[in-house]
Length: 459
Ligand code: ARG
Image (tube, rainbow, N blue to C red):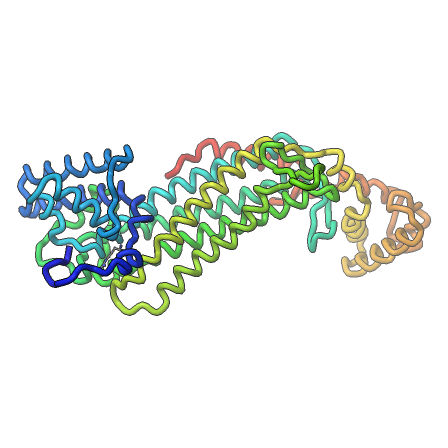
């Protein structure tokens, strides 16, 4: 493609070192869509005749079919997807093909291709997040009244509904979708027409090209347009954060699947055994997801570091944006899919969650609140219940087993109804503030999510 200036062939080693076709081939539908839109621009600008434009469009469609059918021969010496397609087109249709690269450089071409790719994949990821939300919601709705301890510091804190715990992840995932959708505003900006860095003397109606590609705006600075990869960094961050949310969910699932917690039973289809220990049933999906979240952070970091020292404008370093991007997208899509499948068929071991949730100490805060309702300042109430807890441990008698007389030795504010606030159902029902886990709140949240997710198509 640059043979005019060079007398010798590119070294084999440089070809191997510099090629990107082995991974950027997957940009082909976007490269072709971009070229078709560009050909339209060249036609409008009077560079192509209608016949030439038609040949280009047909030729590109044929190449697309060949690639889809595995009949296309990608060549490493042609470096990347852009040159592979352009060469194949020129071989096919001759002179008209050689006109396609007018007023375009691979610098604005690759920027466009990657934007088109990011747009399509953002939508695919959002859809998969919705599918996981539906799966988690289904599980929550199957156990609407299951109670389990809520933890802080991984120490039992207060009782919550299992559904409330799972719905926390729906909130995180909803923010992930919002973040991805917001990123689209910066992805959907059309860079074509920026040329290598300074546009072109051949004027193309860029807005019209953008319209053909479904982009509502065009880039406003050609130098920025060919070197901007911020939109990829944002997408990699959004993916990394989604990965971290899945990693947190994984940690819960891994704990819940232990013999010690035994809150959940994963299906045989979503666990593995051990070649040595016959009794094992390992939560590999959750572990892999927790592990892969590190890789997603690595991909984000890799791009940020690549961008950090770059002078204006395009530098070949930017070719290094693709493998981290492709990897993060492939991994998060798979993680979301496999997780949705696993959680759809997971079972909660309600006998164990109930046993754990029946720990009377989970209601220590409720006892303190009882004193507050009887006029005791909270700090003082907290101390009283602290002493009562020490007494309960020493006496080996739980809160319900302590008599009213004994309660009154700790504070005269205790009255005959003290034992009533030690009932799990009453305690949960009392937590009625917005966002708190009273059963009526949680049931309303389940309904809200069912409605939200039923409507949620992409845009
Ligand atoms: N494969 C290149 C990339 O991914 C395309 C742009 C090449 N531009 C150039 N001036 N060599 O960045």
